[in-house]
Image 1 (cartoon, rainbow, N blue to C red):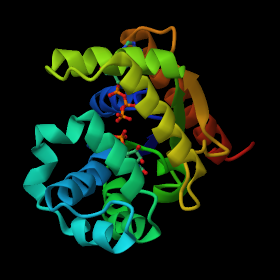
Image 2: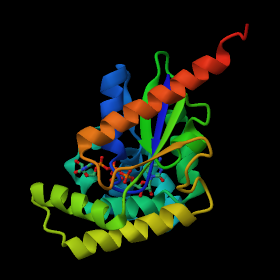
Image 3: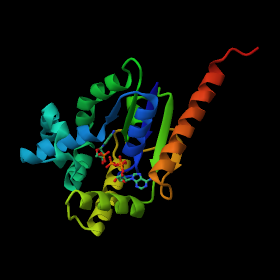
Image 4: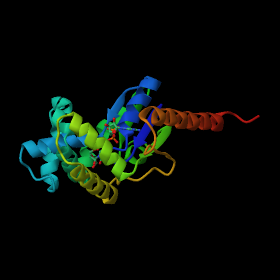
Length: 216
Ligand SMILES: Nc1ncnc2c1ncn2[C@@H]1O[C@H](COP(=O)(O)OP(=O)(O)OP(=O)(O)O)[C@@H](O)[C@H]1O
Ligand SMILES: Nc1ccn([C@@H]2O[C@H](COP(=O)(O)O)[C@@H](O)[C@H]2O)c(=O)n1
């Protein structure tokens, strides 16, 4: 079973995807981390994220980098959304994500293009939303807890510019799959959002089973 979870920055898609993976006992991939690893490599090698060849050169990042705390920095997310707009960067990371999605036993992936590009054949697709200000409040609190003193205004501005860049790029833009169930978490606790997500996945699975059953 493949579950695709997409949505804008800090919408809560990672929290929901991890909970779904625990619930259904399948592995989870946060695909944003791959783009963040490319971004961090670009930053550390002092390359130019807006130059496609520079960003592509950073796609062969060291696997250990995926555990680096700096991946979660606000600045890394910004650069990630610049490198992720390059078609050749997306192509370099494509097969790894497709393999993960289609492994035996299934998987949950979260990102921006899981339901549209990585696994258009997913058994259930969710598109997670929350208002920009609520997303900024949540991300600001998270960064503060990590000792990052980026201001709330900066976090909100970064979220808005990432939303714009991710939605307007030509290749694999952030857009709900036509068959995705949408879930707005703005006024839901984490527990309530996870419960709704599980209910939406169950409804999708039940509908697919009913359609597959022979009619009598
Ligand atoms: N329903 C919720 N209520 C309150 N806080 C939430 C809720 N969902 C997620 N959060 C918190 O909001 C922050 C962002 O959530 P999360 O990391 O899951 O978002 P994301 O969409 O995966 O972000 P990114 O795009 O950066 O990967 C986290 O600190 C998380 O604990
Ligand atoms: N499937 C994806 C996942 C991420 N991106 C880009 O990476 C940036 C960081 O992602 P987070 O999920 O960690 O916020 C994001 O802003 C996107 O530009 C992507 O393009 N496709």
